[in-house]
Image (cartoon, rainbow, N blue to C red; front, side, top):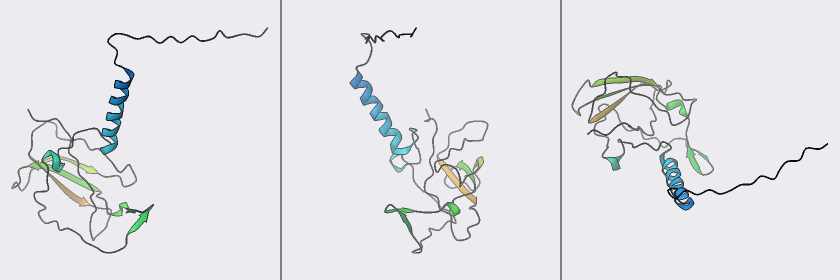
Length: 157
């Protein structure tokens, strides 16, 4: 004897307080666009539009080289042999020579291009400036390539 399945009945239930499907679709599209723009969905306090800027590079010089350029699908690409290996991020004022150590981090050149590093300082504090020190860059003696530093956190009240 062959077993027979009863046809499934799907009833659309609506609640008076439920959002309309087009509202849900709009919100999902907005959130996906926001995520796709920066891949985090988190506010970045280092952005110029958020008030961030490079104020002092101390002894760092901009490296200009008209050397080799590699392209894939018409877009410039690069290797990560010049990416920072160990970094220390400290915060204080623009003229502070030491700052406060927030942590030591290692960028994984074989990992995702976007990597997160949590502040290692036990007690939270509010700082106006962030300083990044590059201690090593996989042995490249000429320069270090740093595309972007993002700063996330809670806004000061």
